[in-house]
Structures are given as structure tokens and as C-alpha cells.
Image (cartoon, rainbow, N blue to C red; front, side, top):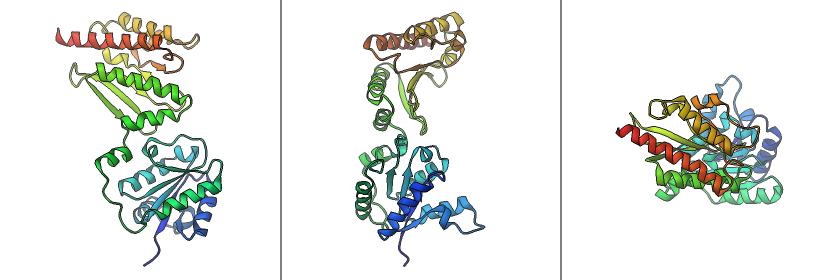
Length: 298
């Protein structure tokens, strides 16, 4: 029987990282499958890559900013996770880990490569490349799921710029939603989010979304969704909300009046950095929720 191989998931822009990692793993006795070397001429690339992931013993992702932006790297890692393949992360630069990998251990190649290589090789020896992984416990399944959830969301925010402060504000927004909204849901992989809904009208109304944009996490308030509910069927009432939001924003970053018919975004920093500002903001959201409920019951 042929020796199992490691599938190396990487961006085509990271040749230097990939060649280094594949070379070191080969020197350590592992077979490596790298698309530029392992796909026969004339083959269908998507089919060959899918089969290679399906048949590998484990997947090693060369994680970088390029890899984070690569649709192929995302597809390959998600397929490996769906197939319960062991997945290992070689972190090559400061790019945040994507949410589907956020709760997995990584080998940090950003500074001490030899130390990182030893950690990766040690981790590889701890798993079987031939036997399927055992079924996860319910707790492990939630922790390692590729889908966004509460546990992963705040860990993801924490690794972004100003992560500690942004994660604190995001957690307070989540606590507010738990106390005031009728439902909270999570979505998104490239820009994870949670959404607070109230059960009014057909199917409910989305009141706000907390979006973990890599550059500036923000709260999005879809004012256009409120148009069919009094008092927000009046443009002037929606505009009042926008003007309160503007009091929280730095000079030069105020929202235009037209945002009353759209989805204004309020960056967590600096707009909601203090307890007073955050209280002003959540008071507006609480009033919106109450008005929506009142309009539905009248």
C-alpha cells in the first residue's frame, strides 16, 4: 500500500512559503501533494484537487494573507473539515485566521521557523494518516465546526486590530441582544456576523448586525427594513436615528441624510468606545425594538 500523503493547501502567490514547507516535510519523510507538481498535464484541475483532498491523510494549509483571500484555499480546507481529515495550520504572516480555522492550533512560522517546524512535525506524529478520526463529542463538534457561532465570533474579533477593545464592545452588544432581541443568529466566513431580530411582521425584522470586518468591526442598522412599521414609515423619524448616530461619530465621518433609507454602519471604535456612548447607542436600538413591537400589536 502506498504511503499516505499530506495535501498542501496554499495560494499560488505563496510559492516561497509553499516550497519551503513542502521541502521540510519531504525531508522529514512525508509525501506531499502540491497542485503545481502533482496534477498531470491535461487533467481537470477542480476534479484532481477534490480527489486529492478526499484521498489525503491530512491537510496542511500555508496560511497567509494571500491564502486568506484565496477561494481555493477556503474550499480545500472546508472540504477537508467536512471529511474529518486532520487539518494543520502553518501560519506564515500576520493575517487573521479565518473563522473556520480560528479554534484550531497553529504552528507559528512568523518568527522562529525551526521551533514552528518541530511543533508541526510533533502534531503530525500525534494523528493517524490512515485511520479516520473518531467522531467528535458534542462539545468538540461545536468548537471545531466551520460555521460561525458565539464561541468563535469573539475569538475571531480579538485577533483583529484593536482586538481586545473591539471584542469587549462586541460582547456588550451581544449581551444587549440577548436581553432585548427575540432571536440571535450567526453567519458569514469572510466577514463573520451576528444578527439580532424581533418577531414582528411576516418573518420578523432584523434590527442590527454586528459585523466583524477585518479593517473596522461595525454595527449595521438596516433602517430601510423599518419603513413599513410606524413611526419609521416616516423618513423624518428614520433621519432622527441617523442624527443620533452622527453624535457618536468623529467629525468628518458623519452619515449623510440618505443613509436613513439604507444600512448605516457604526464602527465600534471610536464611536462606541466609552460606556456612555455605548449606552446612548443601545438606548436607540432598544427604542427601535419597542416601537416595532408596538406597531405590530396596534
